[in-house]
Structure formats: structure tokens, C-alpha cells
Length: 192
Image (cartoon, rainbow, N blue to C red; front, side, top):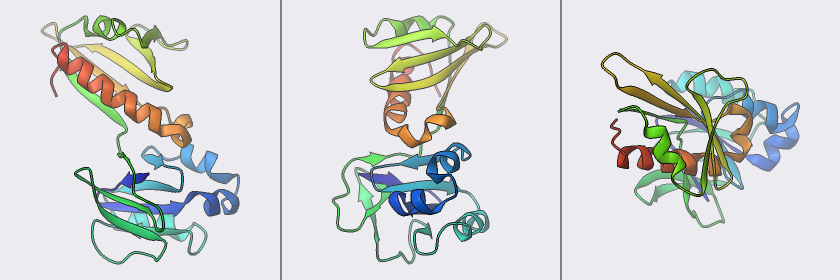
């Protein structure tokens, strides 16, 4: 697999960092909103190269690097375009499908679009245990994301779906679910 990259990225080797980071990558991943991971690498994105460098400096030497869309790469990493996205992958492996840096979806549309999601037999939409009115979780194909439905003046609703940080180490199915949610809500009348 490959990881989608944006402006400034810290990319690290999963196996090495999992052994070397105190507490492993589980706590590290949960503490970072935009963490993504494939079978070999993880990525944390930044808008500031200074912030990316600060995070990389705290990781084991040689196991992580600051990576941009161009510029130098460590020998263990490859970069290129995969399926129309800039991506990185572990040297010696085929890039494979890209895990995009997608944390959430934000759309606006008429009320009741949540019901359109439930029509998909593979999706389950249920009220979050700790949530109030308009707070749901959506489950589909191994993915689990939160969906907030927020009424706005004029009768429309904002549909905000987001990954859960505690699932960052298993982000692939959750990202696939976010992509499906985006398409399903748009098909039902929502817009970005």
C-alpha cells in the first residue's frame, strides 16, 4: 500500500517506531488527529514544516523522516503519483492502493439524508451511546465513524462525519467508509 501525502508529512516505519516509541504506536497514533497507516508506514500531516520537524525529532533516528511532495527522501522510502494522488511507500514494495489523508467529511443538505444511509443494507446507522440528539455512529464494511447531523437556520442540515482517533491504527476501513458516506450523502442531495 501507499500513503497519500500533502504539504509537510512525518512518515515513519511502523515496525521500528512501534518498538522504539514508549508505549508503542497505539498511544502515539491516538494522540494525532491526522494519523494514517498502511501495513508498513505511518503518516502525520502538517501545514508547518517546523511542526513536522519537531515531531520527527522526537522519533527514533532513521525510523521517521519529514517528507514533502518533492525534495530528498531517505533510502527506505519511495514517492510518486499513485492513482492521481501524491504518495509514499516503503522501498522494495509495490505502491498498491493509496490510503488518503482523510479525517472527515463536511456537507450540507436537506434534513432526512441520514435515512438514505440506512437504505444501504450493508450500513448501520445508530445513535451514539454517549451522544445526544443528532449524534450517530455509522458502521459499514469494518469501518466505524461518527456522524453529527446539525440543524441550521432555513431548514437545512450540516452532516459532519469524522474518524475516531482511537481507531487510527485501523484507519483503512474508516477512510473507505468516509468516502462512501460522502458519495451516498451527495447522491441523496447533499453538497460540499
